[in-house]
Image (tube, rainbow, N blue to C red):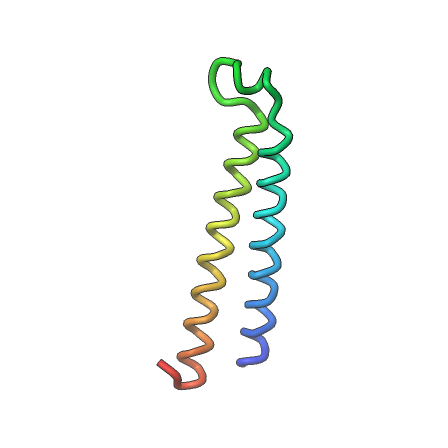
Length: 75
């Protein structure tokens, strides 16, 4: 059980890093026209979605860590 949770934790950490990098890359690709336009640009929306995904993956990783600690009896 613990090995399975560790594998899930590693997957959640990798997903967090991927979402972070994709969000930063999208943010850096924002053009001046996007900044001067009215309302949120498509780039800004994509960057925001990736950062929300990063927060979700971080939360999943924290829950997995808690499950690992509970399953090993280290609370």
